[in-house]
Image 1: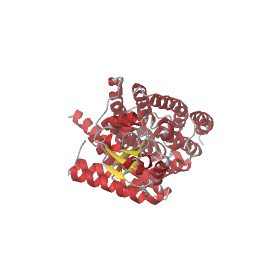
Image 2 (image 1 turned 90 degrees about the vertical axis):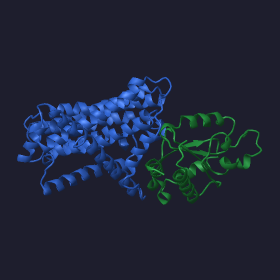
Image 3 (image 1 turned 135 degrees about the horizontal axis):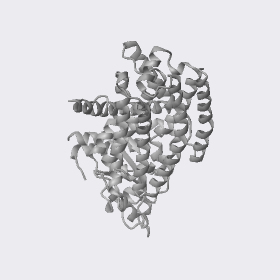
Image 4 (image 1 turned 135 degrees about the vertical axis):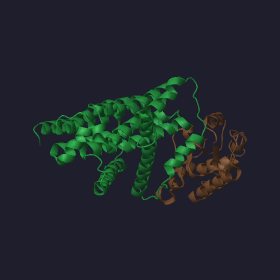
Length: 144
Length: 311
């Protein structure tokens, strides 16, 4: 654990990737920025470009159309970067497990650091997920 | 020996290090006041410093098909110009006789360089959203430069057509500050609008519109280059209120009472800007051009006429 890891836990820019979700998780992302669960006090900000991001927030089960785009976005993220999967569909393909369209779970496409379960996850669960991500950064000091 | 003095002035105090840290702190004030106005808690004081240090640890990506020379040199040019503005302003505030005739024109030209650099960087990156942001930045610049220059002529006129910042400061300190007159107050109001646009604050932030353009010309910048652009923005955020204090409130006074007054003025200008930022929606680019070429230009011309008849 050095300065680098400590700084990364204090400032995380998140980019939102919707890989075919039902829009429920996407609304919950905005909820976390509102006064009640203000995540900006932990240094988490939503950015508009993947080139600025440290965290990729993936929502939804990856389907055939979005898999190549998710791969491209992961490659475009400046490293070290982390991936957080948000919601039941992204974590385990949920309802769409046997669907013809969702061939692979998300964590077989890109390396995933933290799963936040829930349909959609409550803001408390989201904050807990980010605490887990910070613990992971601090413990492993991993730079991927 | 003189070279080292100049290098120290440019790089440490009151140049790069001092104005960048002050600018980042000012940026935190902006974020915190915004958060409080929205009934949130807001980030801790070191948040902007943490962001910048983190961006220096990140990888810097080179987009495919980019013209590397322009893409990587413009952030440095922008930062150098912004640093030079704050160095000139603060050095002349400390020693008003150290300026030269026409340094206010130099400051005006140097203030134009960061937006031009941002524009060029956006065009060089080859991203359609970035070039759209660059073209909006150009139109915005065309709209705010005219009222800015007209408003700037008022303090120059009030101080006996003095074209050096040092003389403007000494004249105001021996007489009354420019803001204490009708024409001075009018041109100060115009100046606040122009500074809002120069900083890209919310009613006039269409070059980097988060919702449609995904941060506009910055979109392809990552890592260290993005950090340098953020530092440029912070230095500009620090030096523009200092420019207003210099031109309208008689410069920085180094007695205890005068300095406290200066700090109060700085915070007041900042709070006015943040309040405008938080109570207005973003306007379209045509609305911005129409607004700037109508109300502020007419206000500034009226102020000029009033200044000519010594009101």
